[in-house]
Length: 196
Image (cartoon, rainbow, N blue to C red; front, side):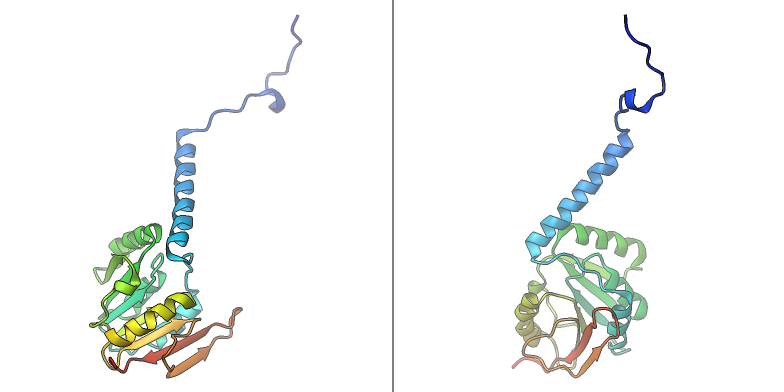
């Protein structure tokens, strides 16, 4: 004879199977995690958003008359979108190599970029810079070292390069700001002198 079990005792209740929306949400989270990990392995660095105070400082270092801004290694697009908002007469060209941040950036640009944020997927070393008035960078030191000679050859004299945290090897900063934030972030502005 079976013993009596109270009907709503949590220890005796079988777990309900997950709802379809829970499985879909889990699937999206797993894909996002794989996208970030895969992108990090592919590019050599994880997407690192620029903090709002650093972003504001970088944008203050841009000349007000810029018309063509390049952001290299744009990640999820926080800086590109802020640059477009701060410079309404400029077009922002954002390059990102990792597919998940690129996809998120494409979506942000389509929804909020007002047609002035153009998103490109590919290696930032292949990006043409001849038309850029300004370049925004937050890249790891190895990428900065690889990019420095390409910018020196590709940018027109007078174009501005603003970097977050890492120096551009072989370039002399015309202005250096050390922020009073938790990381003591250094922001540098360089000016291109042209090829040669």
